[in-house]
Image (cartoon, rainbow, N blue to C red; front, side, top):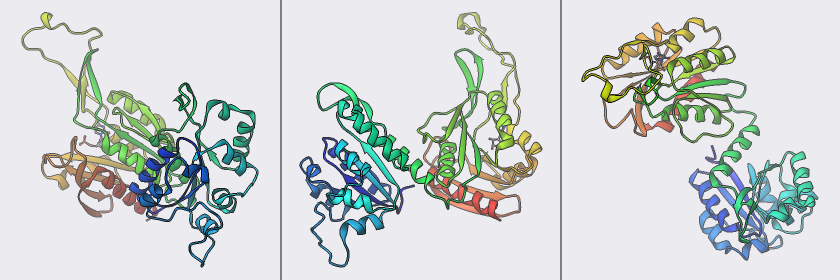
Length: 402
Ligand code: C5P
């Protein structure tokens, strides 16, 4: 999401400055270009050289020091930025931004920027809760500036309180949502995606179940990839992995539960991607209490009955929806996948060979063939499931626009 984004990182003076170093490293790792501006007081906590080395760009501190005569640094950085991040933001800098004060490099640059501004406050609890600080934060929010809520926990003062610099994961999550909100030209804006993930769990008794092999990683990666392209995403899942807050997660366990949720949401869905490994059978009569081993015979027979085929049912009732299925096969990959595409009335199917050990189940890599209803075929070579998900979403976008 942050790849090739130009981020102006403004660092102001509080003890959390050292955490901004890690945030900068994360931005760089994600593929962003970062230029840093610091206030004088921020430089008292961490030497600007640290930010310079990690960003591979000059760090700006003094508005009147112009190393490049061709442009004014504080205006240049604000014009260059796709997004401005103030982290950590002190109560002093928040107050200055709220009142349009431009008395140092950071605040002068922020007054000039047209980029969306994202603020990460970190300060003492009493400073944060002070009425003036709260009124200033409100002023920023009224202006469309995003101000994160600080975390609560152990503060530098030696006691618990609200004011901590939030976890890097939460900052990234909220930043990505904020960027998506400000990107009007994303190809899936206005589309509703419904994605399923994980193997369903079919109860034998309260402590035992049968399931299919599936980590849920591909489903999560597809949900994320669609969200990054601007889609409104709902994920119906049996598996647990990290997910951006803006994606609605609906936890289920059995195929019946998954069916009910998908059936209810289907009418308002534009694209359904069934990544879940739905069990074909469920236990005919579940035991309400734990089956005791010493009361069971040496051999037991568990009667199974057929589960609903969720995708086939949606294929039968679809009107405008675009349906994507997965086919995990151990032989005749393409032939079986194409048959499934037709039988379930799909628009696209992703076929993968699960007999291999280096791709497929419970590893981070996969190699797939994408087939479409109108006989297109794409061979996607072995790569991470995240990359595969991005490619699948790209192909869906192409088909929606065809
Ligand atoms: O028929 P098969 O199970 O191989 O088909 C795989 C596709 O159908 C997957 O997309 C899977 O999520 C979906 N499916 C389903 N309900 C079932 C079985 C499979 O939606 N009961």
